[in-house]
Image (cartoon, rainbow, N blue to C red; front, side, top):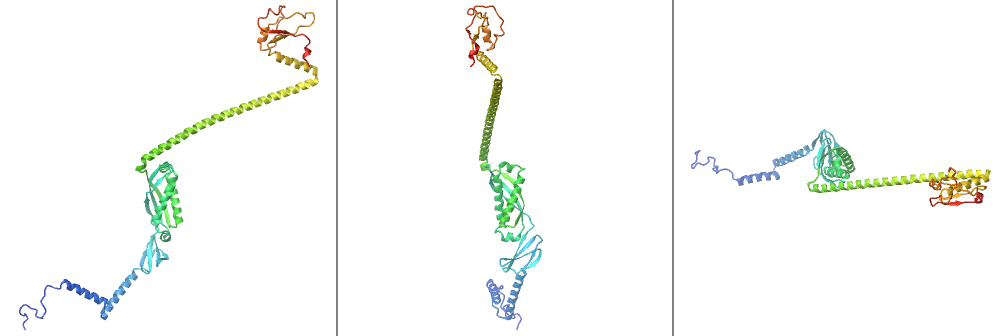
Length: 374
């Protein structure tokens, strides 16, 4: 038997190579291997499947190892229910779906920026930029207190800023001196609301970084500010006028009260003087009735005749009773009723009718003066 058969064939009787296995043969080869693994027909295939299962179980158990950092807290939940809270270090738990561990960083300070639109008390619309720094202080409240802690923080922060800025004026927000008070009150209000909700978030600081007026309302706000200024000026002018009127009225009232008080004092003093005079006259009359009566008569006649335009002349009784004494009647009348007859010097007798140069009437009174005394 020759080693090289005719035709170049294989000396072992194998078929000549025609270029290797085709793609269909490779696919069929892998299908046969897969069927062997899924349906072991012998002890060797059964042991291979067990090994695969053991390796998968070991990997599942190994996935239960975890590590909690120094700034973290690990919350262990068993079938979705809280089991325990673990601190720093390594630990192991039954892998999902039996137990899960959620890590919460309680030391990291995060920052969120919000841009609420606020309407102030004086009618100005503002776009604010507020930066809130916070940390997740309580991991249990963060995970189980609210559904979305960050969304809760956003809504609470915007609501607090709107409440505080809405109570103030535009100048309070724009002025740098008023901003620290505004931010401190906002921080306290945000923290109080978060504590009421049980969010487990601690606010570190609140900063008002920017204040802008929307472009769409700039002209309207300018007109509103001008109208407010005009109103305040009109109110100020009205208050000034009212103050002047009130002050004038109060001064006039005070003057009237003072005049009334003076008139009262004068009338009371006059009445008291008249009463005292009457008392003295009554006492004098009780001591000397005739003298007092004579004096009263003389004083009364002096008061009455001193204001009259008539001159009363009483002729003297006796030897020279028919003669008259010349009196300057015009001078007597011109001295406002003063008794000047006693001061006139005696003059030679003259005719009474021809010597008078005015219309003064001269009356001669005869008889006893005591006729007027009653």
